[in-house]
Length: 289
Ligand SMILES: [Zn+2]
Image (cartoon, rainbow, N blue to C red; front, side, top):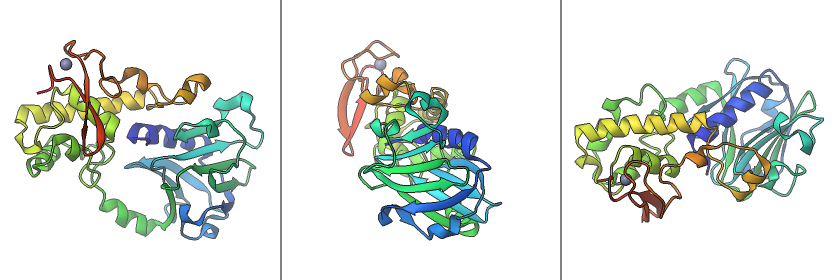
């Protein structure tokens, strides 16, 4: 599943390429993937593309209309010029779950929605398992929804005071609390594991047992791993990516995620794998206490 940095990079790349372009028509190939009336988007100009939580947000015509895209497990956004071909992969935009669909002929059997732009370029929403969704909202409904979202970990409003309050109210494990999207936006499994290693905190520690100093280290570590994730273009963790040169490189900089049996970069200890809340949890028992 793409996490905050991967969604951020996808949104930035789309913003660079499709801002100012106009939607001609929308083909909804799978109704489950699209909520709202696709006709509302016809003739609308894309004012901006950005990220909020783990959603890609397209703003139209000074906030009159908003399109939300949540990629969930296997969603992809692929934008291609009319003249696209496989020899010029980097001229398009690919984001989300890395598979061969990034480079193959589109539409294909995983394509759920196609946005045809007036200039002949196309934005494809592919989703193998159909957990992802697209939603059309009025600007007013979007503002209401956004007001109810918790701060994203990269926001200024995600302050040390905020994290202190969230952790002090919970007797669950610290890893589950930082990944709780109702409390903190944008921390998925990769960056939760790596932030806890950077802060030298054991993932199974009870959230309200952390000392003031540990909360400070965790706050800084969460911000730092997100900065690194965005700097490296996100993590594109698949065999496919290695052969195509597309996607981000944060996977080359994982601190503990998917590194069981390897050496901890803090202390040289051996990284182990366990499970918390059903999710793969990687940590160093030597320095994460
Ligand atoms: Zn260690």
